[in-house]
Length: 340
Image (cartoon, rainbow, N blue to C red):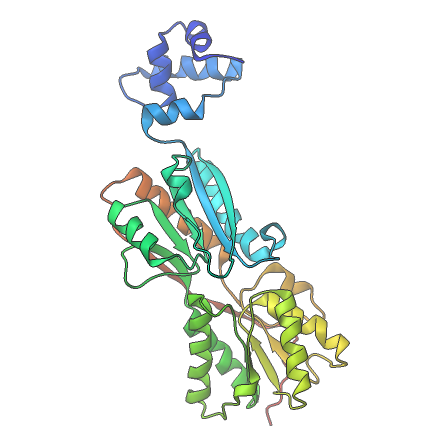
């Protein structure tokens, strides 16, 4: 294994000069810096991250903490994959690695979202759908821990977050369905304690009130953002023997589950039941029929979150930043036109 002393010898400089170049410190002539970098390249030297952390108080790694339900694999989930794609590009640009930590949500168990930071394994944290405990939100705010939250937020704390305009997006979806002639609308909810799920449900109630539609509580179904949750919901809906004309789902994964289970129930989409999703993950384009959905700009949201995090890591005077992204309606084939 190549050492820092060997790099110094190859470049004809002192050990301290190599350290300054590696840690991007000043007081090194550009010509000398280039010579050291060339020696590093020739010798294929990889600086020890622990040593660099002790010298610079940084470890050049950011943590991505993702809270999921049991049975959800983030590597097979396009929602997370698209977010991660955006985050990864900004990390590469800033010469940082990513440490991904997934946390399964066990009832009654409080997860320590800040553990990696306090262990000095990361310089900052991006949290995805965390439902983070109040005590840890206070820690982040009071100790000014570099942190950005995606897909959830707290209005009580000055913590930066990135999100989509969920309530307005469901309003737009409802207007679209109303224009298509749908007056019997059902809604498949997301995880109960998730802020985005709550906002999307609130948007659905807005639609019902705005268009003076009858609210049938049996058509508002429990969901969990998973494909299997969509399957379960449709089975319960079919058992009522009284279908709405359309089921608006709080995410695409559940909509995919509804469409898959419809075949088992002997239902045709959209002839017997129209289905609409939310997220716009790539898979929606490959369903039969093609799923109509509301597309979140997930890659762009990942980029924004990572850029905001590096601003915090590099700037101690950084203040809270909020980025809310609009959501775009993507018309497919899963919604029947019943107008007239």
